[in-house]
Each structure stands twice: as C-alpha cells, then as structure tokens.
Image (tube, rainbow, N blue to C red; front, side, top):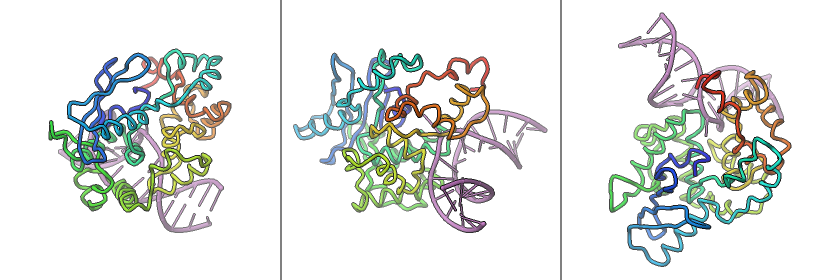
Length: 285
DNA sequence: GGTAGACCTGGACGC
DNA sequence: GCGTCCAGGTCTACC
C-alpha cells in the first residue's frame, strides 16, 4: 500500500497505518460507491456504505483483487532476495505488491502526470481531474470517482489546460482518452496478455506521453519487472548507493540491477537505499 | 540510433 | 516583488 505514492492520489484515500484505505469507484452499472479495504487474517475485507447488488459486489471483489495483486505469488523473488542484505527485509515485510488502480487507463493517466514534474504537482493535477470530471459520490457530492475515458474525451485540450492545469500533458491525456473511448485503444486487455515484455513495452510506448520511464513504471504495475523506471530519483539513489554521489546515467542504473534479471523492477523498488539513511546528515532533502 | 531544444506548472531560492 | 531554476520525461527535428 505504501510502496509507492499511488495511495496519495485520489480517488484513493489513505486511512492511516493498519486501517487500510478507501476508494471511490464508478461501477459498470454507473453507480458511484466508496469502498473501504482493510487487512484481515489471510486476506482483506471490503465494505461499502451503499447498498449494492451481487453483480456489483463481484465487480468490486474482482477490482480489489487486481488493485492489490492478491493472486500473485512472490516466493521466487523472496528466494533470491534472502541472500542480499539490501533486500532481506522484503520477505519479512511481505513486500512485492504495488498498489494499482482498477483500470489501466487510470494508471496510464496517473503515470503521465508523474513525468517531468514534482510529486506535489502530480497530486494537484490528479485531484483536478477527479474534481472537475469525475462522477460525484451521492453520499458526499464534493468527492468524486476517477473520470471515465468518455468523460475526458468530451473535453477540449484548452479546457484540460485551463481547468486542470495539465500544461503540455493535456493533449497526451486527451489523445489517450479519445482512443480508449472510441475503442481504438484497448488497455484492459493488456492486463492479462501473454505477449513478451519487450512487445508490451513497445505497445505502451505507442501512447503519446509514455516514454521509457513511464513504460517501465507501467510494466512494473502490470507485474513485469524486467525493466527499470529510471528517472531522476533513480539516478540520485544509484549515485549515492554506488558512486559516492557522482552523477550517473541510465547505463549505471541498469548495470547495478542487471543481476536481478526478471525481478529487476522489484529489486529496485524495494531496495534498502543508503541515501534514505544518510539523507539528513549529508544530502539536502 | 543518438542528441539538442522545447515544453506547462508552481515552489524554492537568490537578489 | 521579480527572475531564474528545476522537478520521479517525452516529443520532434535533425544529423
């Protein structure tokens, strides 16, 4: 849940340590509900305030299973991580799962909003999209679900720039929304595809606004861990981990994690970075 | 296939 | 108060 920042992006709502999280969702029926997810013995519990049908219940269970990647087994990763002190805590903490949105459309939009900006801006832009274009939660109309592709597709680039302040990302988001809404782009099928990772990466990079970093981030979310989302943060971490703070490039990041093969992404994601420990004494935060 | 320059935004910083 | 820089990159034009 806390392994990356998604929990901070609406319509997720963090309920605090040991209290799980909430998510406002527009179901296939069009009904907008909020569900709470809490850890339970050997699993999670899901609860809603709203009255829902059996079909809606099944839909929510299916979505939460995807969001928490509950069907994934990480034993192979733990096996190779045990001998690496920097990863030894992963098994103890049951790490490996990375929170994701119910739809890949939402995760692609959010990933594009992480590029070339500060995290605070990513939160602000996501909040703006949700507030302006997401369907209201009937029980609390001030709160909203994530906007559908159809809703975003109906907006103009100027509106997305002016209202949501997406800047140059506005045409990327609009283009994606229109392709998904028209059926030209089927992102949901990519969740279960068996195509090789290299081909899936190429497919993701056909989306305007999705480059090497964004594609690798999305591949990790899709459970493909053989590419690294190398961004400025990764360069900084690797620099302080192995190069005494000297500037490094993508090649150095790739080199340091190459030995983890198909688990590269998870090794990177859950690495116990030296930078975190010494940041307060030697590195400006 | 590699590289330079432009791109929205808003907070931090220096003056 | 103002100008500059830059941040969890990507696209396009050009070579």
